[in-house]
Length: 110
Length: 172
Image (tube, rainbow over all chains, first blue to last red; front, side):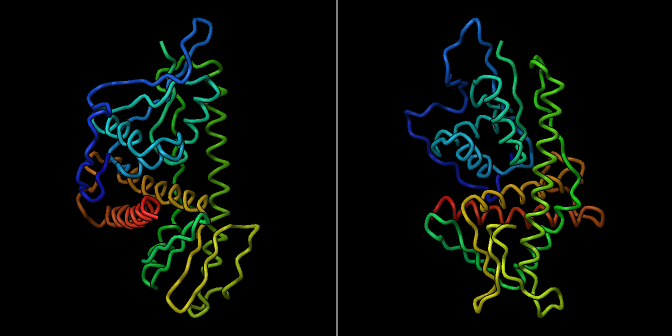
């Protein structure tokens, strides 16, 4: 991901999860009858970090802090699982993210 | 470029003549942009995957067609009579929610919040399109040459306007 102005990294409060950990906040409980689908954002060298943060805030309604956490995960780990959803909802989110030219896909949750 | 907030109604961009030329120049590239199709999934396993991929491609194409029309309306409303192009037309609210007109302080572009998002999407799509034309370099700015100059310039100009809009949205 590109850093448009070589921005100084924003200090993250101690209570926030660190970018090195992988956390998936599940919006629905897993069920044996309902496969879930993961919405994944992949890293690329072209999209600006602050742009990606902004898109996450707009598409998911997240706070800046949460959006930055996932952006840093994409940047540092190559990808971030943004949410786990039903088939239709996951498709919707991928459509929305791709409208912003982010590299996003949906993957079946194992 | 000056950006001022119009409350919950969006932003007002005031551009000088040169900035206006820069913005219109990059926006004018949208119509000839090579469409980029992204897959819906990498790993597969999606029910009716082929149909879903087709739906995504169709939705993307439809959105692109809408964007071209909306951009044409915006570019028409921005035409400067002094430059010998079409007379400055009143913006057509049916064609676009954006209003562009020449004022004493420069060229003013009034954008609703939705249209600010739309402009961000367009600028990024143009920027990513230029990057694709450069062959998707890992290093964001490849070596400047006669063959890369146009795309590098496009990426830099789009990036400038994107960062200005993002800063304005983050700091109303």
